[in-house]
Amino acid sequence: MKKLLIASLIIVASHSTLAADSKAAAKTDVFAKATQLYEAKNYPAAFAEMQRLAESGNAQAIYNLGYMTQNGQGTNKDEKKALQYYQDASNKGYGKASFTLAQLYRHGGLGITPNTPKFKEYLDRASKQGSEEAIVEIATLLFAQGKPETDQIAIRQLRPLIQKNYYPAMHIRAVYDLGQGVKNKNPVTRQQAIRTIQSLAEKGYAPSLMALGNMLANGDILQQNLPEAKKIFTELARQDIPQAKESLAKVEQIIKAKEQQAKASKP
Image 1 (spheres, rainbow, N blue to C red):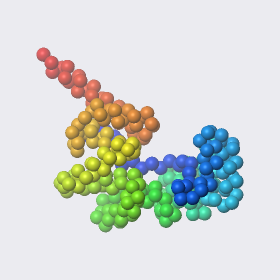
Image 2: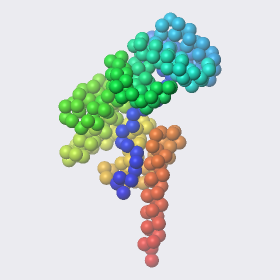
Image 3: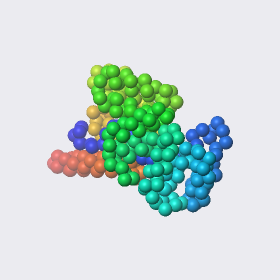
Image 4: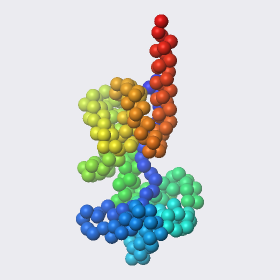
């Protein structure tokens, strides 16, 4: 039953979100008013404030106009216009906009059809513009090649983000280390990776919770604990985390099968 679960250990979030000022702690947050209006769901006023900021050339504000236009928040939903906002923000050096465009060229959307060369182009641009999401995704793709030389490149790229306690980087490195620990029969590397995943899971990081749930359900790396796996997947499914509902269904099937087997074995 080790391979029954379909959820992967590695999940990389790739959806766009409204960008708040990540440097607010170091300076006055110019997005404070817009953020307050947005969180209060006063979308027309929030959009107007974003427009005011965008008129000064603020790339983050331009990106946010794209996000709100894509979702019809405070303005008419317009995919073509949203795409143009993302492109403008990317051209101004905003990494999150470039990463969003990379995902559109990877999966399609907003009138864009999947285009692998364009995906790679925008992912590389996003990484050079400082997008942490892009750096992690590039590292994930490098790990997937399964070559020692690309593994080392990925590890070097992740190191600065891990030093900043950036959860996605810590998770991807832990998953890689876990795989290496199992492959090379290195219990120290394996255990360190498990501890990192468990620590991130305790902090509520969804990909690590998915990984932990998988390990508890499969019983090959950790001792099988189906009730705990069910508890994890139930909460993740409630949050609409990708693959959580499918994993929950698989766990419930296993639990039911075990219960039926136990009943059948009774005299």
